[in-house]
Amino acid sequence: MKRFLKGLAIVGSLVLGFVLFVVNTSVVLDFFFWRDVAGKVTAARIRRVQPGMSMRQVVHILGRPYTMLSEEGSETYNLSMRSTNKQGANETDTLDIEAWMRQATADSAVHSSSVGSTPAHDRSTTFTYTRPVAWAGRYPMLWVHFDSSAHVSSVYAKVYRPYSVLDDEVIYSLSPPSEWNSNLDHLESTFD
Image (tube, rainbow, N blue to C red; front, side, top):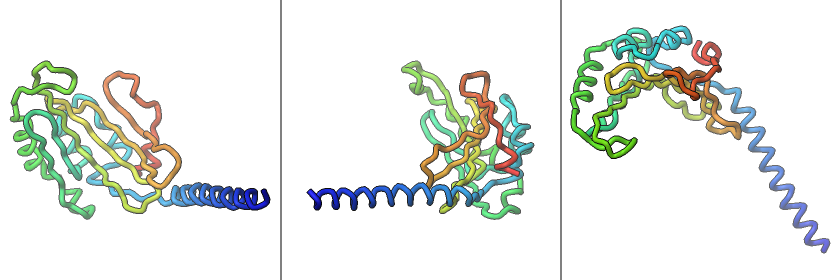
């Protein structure tokens, strides 16, 4: 019986030590906040982007996104920006973005939409203005979503905590009226 209790105490100590290590590590890493943000992104500029704006208007406000992804139809189009420094990211050359969008939206193939089996042409496009940061305790992500007419349908920002036991935090959500809109707005503490 003594051996069993001693073994149980050792296992319990190991489990408790592991749990304390994970909690302490997540708390410590939570203080290491890094970000890799493209273009001219600031809290004030993010708020200027509104549903219904064109891609050209968004690029004028936020600058060039790191990636653009257009899905559905007969193909998926992905354009990754190669800029790695602030000067390269701040250069707003909308010509290649517009050419890419013309190519992506010219895909008029009728297909089954993801909502049902009704044939439709429903292409969604997403501009991503941030990138994940390796080994960061926290980092922000910002997406601007466009509908099939290439106009803003929603803006979404989140802070990821990859090494934390805590949930990722939605810091901004803007879309046409829905229950998913967020009253939270922590853009200044994240993007400024």
